[in-house]
Image (cartoon, rainbow over all chains, first blue to last red; front, side):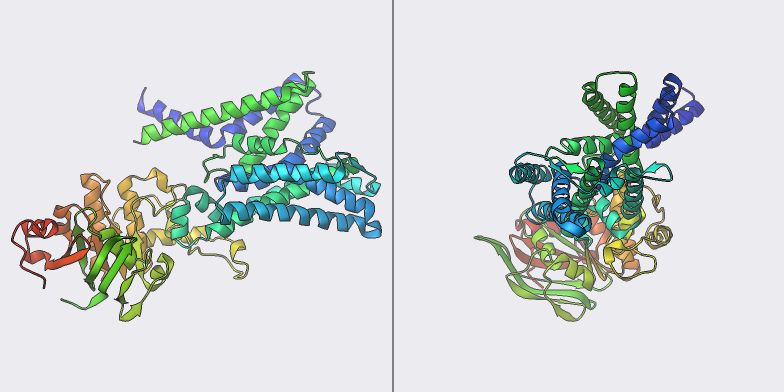
Length: 326
Length: 256
């Protein structure tokens, strides 16, 4: 190979590494636009936005936890908690039921987030163990409290949050976009976000230089729960009810979206924009399977395969980059 | 000897039944590079950890910059002007060079309340960091590159220059070149001598006697938790230092 083709090749690998998932996403979208005329319709785009906003908001919070070098398995259960607590208060609390429900749901979820943060940051419990524990406990408590039955009868006006539109854009998608913008700013522009990268990259060095790693960790797990709480509130709005089984397995889908976007479970790596791409990549694949009439049971199979391929390709390219700089 | 930036007097430290330091005194001259040598287990690292605030001595006193000090943490020592550079632990690999230089001291825009929500002024930090490193380093590594893409020597240089750039009075280094090749060792030594050139005081632990003789002004020798003595580098020979370290040959002319 000549020097110039090598340079072109390495420039290409650089672009592919930086924007690989975006390219794959665009290729997929282009393919779908050509292959299925229904894909590009307003109604279908609205569907994709509707279906992925709830998981997207959870993924935004999960991005912080993963960049920090951990993850949060409890977010699905926390979203269900938010949903059930919020719906119950909205049904039972009378005139000011809706604001009381929202505040109550947020409060319940922040207690879980603070518990996660306290266990992980201050007691040094492994994030997997801590959040697996709170996930199981919270889901169990929801079943106990509801006797595993759904809560119906949320004021119908609240469905605006889940099903309404502003300027023809679904409100959940607008909430997702706002969360992504705000948290993207926090992660990439503020001291707090900077410290999330520092602690995720090398907690010893960061602490040595005066970063309070425990406070950063605590705040990240509270933030992850807050995102899950918001998702749970939107879930109420989509059905005017709450089910104890809500958001089952969302934690794993969110982790998959963040990792497919290019974040590393080792910590210190990942971007909010990549998470958004990851969310919609998985979302469009699910949508494509649906449009081609493939059984929905194939959807987790596709998600799992994409996850494995993405991580394997990332690991392979990282190794070869380091080999070439040696 | 010139005035001392740090005087440790009669320091002792035990870990359970193990006596790591016994009645150890050391003076570090202002603007000098002081070498601390001794065999494995002689107590070098323990003494350095006491000086840098990682460990608290059981007994004895430390006078730094003219005042009695008793550091409860490395952060306290750093705030007073003692910076310790640990091999490979000092930098965050995934952050760019400028972010490591400014880690824990970030520059921000505007509003000063709500510390964690401060918006970082990345551009100013990046250009300032280059100037700060340039004081000590002739070839400043790419300032926006993540540290993990630098060589081991470049990383060590960044860590040392960062310590110097933040106005530390005393920089402590435990085996600063242990993992480095010949050229990189030379580059790190150049930075250490540049620190002295700028009036900073340096304490270096090294197993490499050639290096100790190349860069230090004064050598202190620890053996089995006791300070055996000190020599001016110019007035001693490696043979003498080796015999002081091991306690074997009769060259030991007694404590000063």
